[in-house]
Length: 148
Image (cartoon, rainbow, N blue to C red; front, side, top):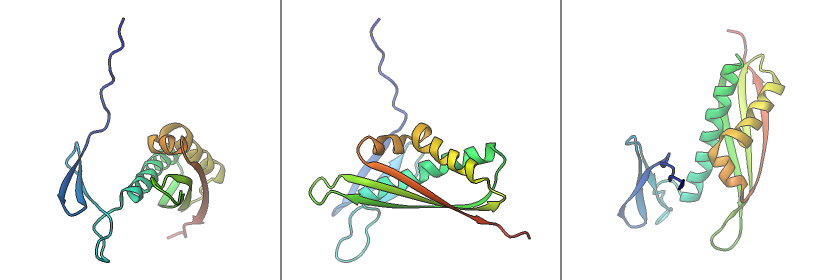
């Protein structure tokens, strides 16, 4: 029996709006400006930085969901991404580090560590794609939420 092609799970359109600027639009109509800095001012996300933002969003989405299922009382999550690229075109990422800054009440470090691990190795498609080419590492810091 011949294989049936899989239906794409993601659809995005990039529309050129002049210069080196594009508007990216997803299947839900959400838009984002994409373009390198020109004449000293920002024109939107640089494409490579957009990939890093996608990684942080993808991982964050998973971590929040996993911690909620574990009944962890997370009140804030910030993910900072640092990356190193090759010095020559196509400037491939070689090392990407995610630093998770969490705040909540009585967050269990072992559960946080496991949620991050599951996201980065099992659930996050962006992490799986990047880790196929670059070394992906992470760390986390938990801040205890003060009682109100």
